[in-house]
Image (cartoon, rainbow, N blue to C red):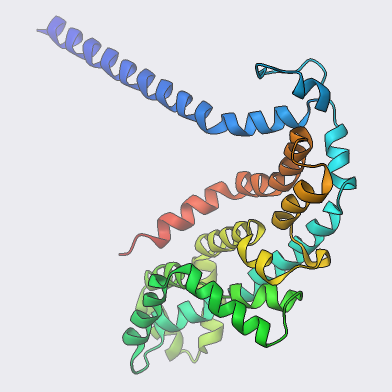
Length: 289
């Protein structure tokens, strides 16, 4: 009897080990598939232009890497200026977004006012409007106000987000109502309760929407392309197009890849630093109860 139990446990152990091995193999293959474009981008960026064009069959390595392409990325066009513009645009837009999103989520989750649920339902209905219609409306408004080729025109249409308000509102709603009522009995004002209780308790979600907004601003292309035709207001996303058209030309792929690496690096580093906060915030925001 004991031998049968031992055999059964050994068989189950082998099955678990085999299942784990298969899982790791699949995950490894998937990681290679996902990361290979990044590897190819970095590899191409350190190849010499002549050696790259001489490769009839692309090589997966290079014996003579060079950083010349990275130097060209900053000299062919004012990429440093585009970086500065993007940082200004990202910081101001994200900051204003938080000033709008956090109080709005608090109002929808804690304040009792007439028509709150109806207003929130109509607010969520805005997510059903196609992005193209919003872009056309915003472009007309910004143009009529004379805000083209200004940071104000770049920033204003992006200072709010229905999705982020919804995500944060659901997270705020998970905090027990008893805390709010007890704070009100003690004479705590709503703003103090928001800053001292709700924001610290929901910090992972706030960090998440902040990082997602930073990524959204950094990758923004269509709107900046519409409202700016002055290079002094170009962002890095527009800078890539400028590099392609007026920089090294479309045939200099290694230099283009170097510029893409430089532009992508801050977002990759940001995600690696805050990846746990992002996952935690999304999980908390999407779970209620």
